[in-house]
Image (cartoon, rainbow, N blue to C red; front, side, top):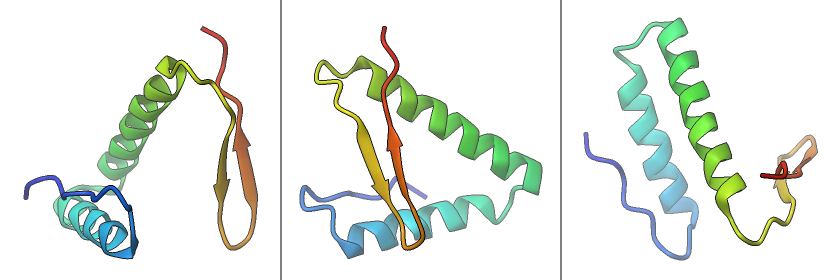
Length: 74
């Protein structure tokens, strides 16, 4: 399956496409492989966050908590 298209608006349909993409990818993986895949993706995201010139904290909101990630200094 190809990576899903993500619109500039990043709306609910984009989130569903991403969720479906990952669900289909993970069906053939073991639990350990899924965890490793998630960790690899998180490492890639952290590299991108660190490389940004505007190093503002990133706020992640969920229904139960608010997480703030302060990008480390280079």
